[in-house]
Structures are given as structure tokens and as C-alpha cells.
Image (cartoon, chains in turn red, blue):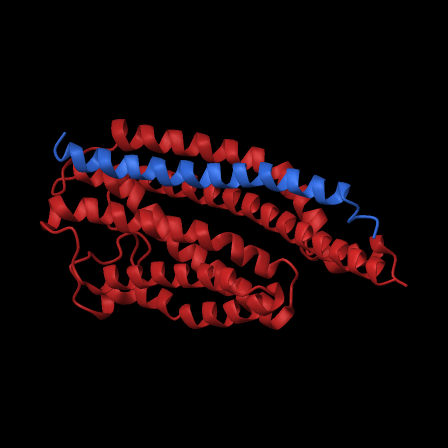
Length: 259
Length: 47
């Protein structure tokens, strides 16, 4: 028999998080700090976006939409990459929190994808003269949004959680093919959407007066995403605990009736 | 400020989405905590 303390040491800090109760306790401790940090970063980012960053020489003040659009677009892909990683965790390692993480990340990822699409459209109308164009970048992001909705619908449609986890994990991995398509669509096809200007070979092409507020905003949104993810994972763990208690209770009631 | 309406609409949308997510997590947490306490009180824990 392995003493729990010894097992924890052997599995390490990350392994110990596989215990949902321990994870929930850690989430409860970190959520207020991360929430506070994201609020500070987002407040600084908003100040920089409106009072520090100059109007762009071509876009004018419309460039201020980018401080919202770009982090939302990054997070839409980051959340899906996390879901794909969690799908591997479900299928290969059967990690107890993998499906919890994926299920919690999906609505948050879908929301940021929606925000990226709407803010992109609100930028596109004054800059391109169109709310929407069927360009490879825009279309692939729309497909990402539909994949998110598909994953959420599938989780809801399948009653048995373990079966739902496996099927959704397979769909999530298949859908991951869309993420590199989104990233490289601007290089592979002749798109109206501009090519990468921050993460690219040869460094960013944006002036630091706009790049720094953009990075602060991205940091704020990323910390916010992690905070929301931890909160949603803690909720999902509680939801599963309630379900198992109810099943156990129903079983106990029916066996008591039978005897 | 040029195109002010588009900028305001984009940030309003951002505020709605972010506060929606924060409220969703917080309200769901409160609701589930109540339901869990109820399920434990109904005797689920001891079985």
C-alpha cells in the first residue's frame, strides 16, 4: 500500500493536481489573486489604448479596436490548443481533469472567438468598407467558432460523461487541423486580412507605441482567461460530484426498496 | 476621434462578453455550491 504523502511526492506537484479536491482547493486560493491581476492589467491596457497609444498613420483611431480584437483572436486559438491538449490527456493518459479542462475551456474559447469575429467586423467596415469578406482568415475563424459550438452541443447531447469525453476528444483533435490553417492562412492564400505583424520571423513590424499597449492587453486577457478557466473547472468538478452523489443516492434508494 | 461609433461598439461588445463570462462562472459557482450542499445533506456522502 502506498502512503498518500509518498505517492504525492512521486507524482510531483503537477500529478497531485489530478486529485479534483486538491485542484479545487488550489483554484479557490489562486482565483482571487489572478482575478485581481487581470483587472489591474486590463485597466492599464485600457488606459494605454485610449490615452497613450497614438492614432495609426493609416487606420487613425480605429487601431484602438486592435487592442481588443488581437487578444481575443489569440485566445480563440490558445483555448482550442488547450482543448486539443486536454483531448490527448483524455484519450492517451486518461487524466481525470483533462475532460474537465476541455469542457470548461470550450464556452470561454467560443466567447473569445465570437468577440474576435465581432470586433474584426467592426474594424473591417470603416477600414475595408465591408462588415464581412469570405477571406481565408475570417472564414477559418468562423469555422473555429462553429467547431466550438459543435463540441459544446456534443457534450450536452451525450448523457454518459465518460463516453461524451472520448467522443468529444476525438472531434476536438480532428478540429485542431483548423488552428494551423487559421495561423498560416494569411501566408498560404492572398487574403484581405493583413499578415502576422507580432509573432513573425524577423520580429514585430508594429511600432513600440502600439505594440506595448497591445502586449499589456494580451497579458491581461490571458490572465483573465486562466482565471475564468480555473473557475469554470471548479464548477465542472462540483457538477460531476453532484451527479455522482445523486446516482449513489438513487442506487441506495432503489436497493432499499428492493429489500 | 474618427470612427468613434465603431470603437465604442467594439469595446461595448468586449465589456458584454467579458462580464457575461465572469457572471456565468460566479453565478454557476453559487448555484452549484447550494446544490452540492443539498445533495450531501440528502445523505449522498455517507452511502
